[in-house]
Length: 302
Image (cartoon, rainbow, N blue to C red; front, side, top):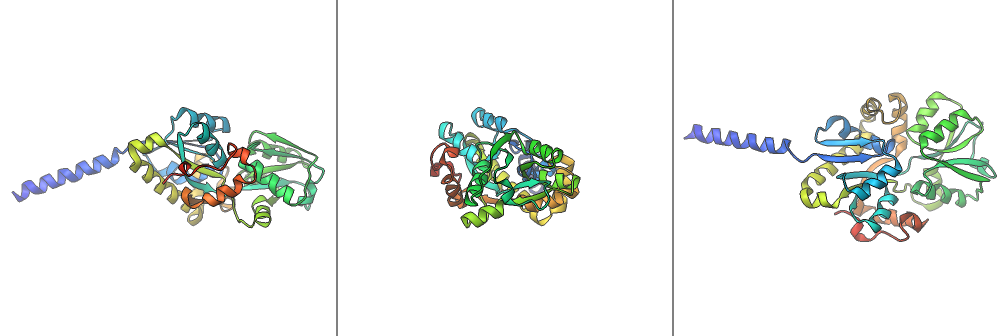
């Protein structure tokens, strides 16, 4: 009898293990750069997540409408705007908190150099755009003309090609550019924002969860969020390993450049319900970027 019971217990344990291994596979999409690096540990080590990185702004916007992804990592304001017309995804967490820099090859480059200058930004109509314009206005900086390119990769190309260019860039692209040209100087938008607003960071990219997936398998979503929090934490506690993963995955340049870039990317996992005030502060800068109004409480995942 004891032998029979032992066998039965063994079979039950085997079934439990099998069940855990056949847990629902989640489809996740994200842009490249800092948000992609925040996912690096999951991307490299987890077999239960189907992750696609390097999605463009247009692809992210389309994903909110099609509802095909279980998880979308995207600018906070994009998710908030889409929620107003198509409430398919909830904000579960914010994972990046500002990785923007003004850069130029100009010697002794300083903020005053933007006065009356032609400058090149990326991210027109996004949080990035609103934050940069806010800090320039707070410092009485008036540019002659602001033009936009489609990504920080394109602004970096301009930075490297034109020694007189003044551009907006993001990490890790900035560190990669500096590794190629030692003349590049940069000014932290995060430091300017803190001086102007009193807040040391601003919500940039968030993790959005598909409401239908939550209803069907909340456990799978919650397990993913725990794994994501751990992946973000490793960016600070094991930067060199994450840099190695990111290099192998093609998420932002060489390992050496990424070791410098990751600490400057402000990757920090915070639950959405804990950052409502931070989001509302950014909304006040330009409500139009958030669909014209502060997000409702129903927008935040519990």
